[in-house]
Picture 1 (cartoon, rainbow, N blue to C red):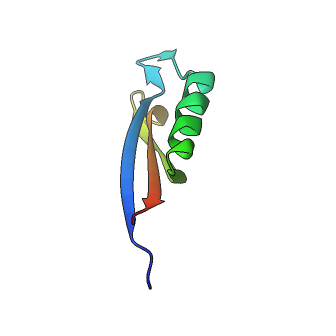
Picture 2 (picture 1 turned 90 degrees about the vertical axis):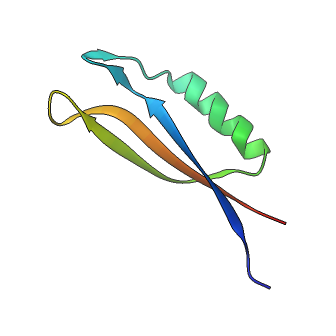
Length: 67
C-alpha cells in the first residue's frame, strides 16, 4: 500500500516594504496547531522583495497523509 498525501501552501508575510514584521511566536503557534492536525512542514522558501535581495514573504509547504 502506498502513502497518499495532501499538501498545503502557506504564504507568511515577513516584511512590509522596509519594516520587518515576522512574528516568530505566532508562526510557531500556527505550525504547532497544524502539527496537531497531522500537517508536517516539508519545505520553506523565501520570496524576494524590493529592494532586490530582501525577503518579502516565506512560502511554507506542508503535507499530511490521507486515509
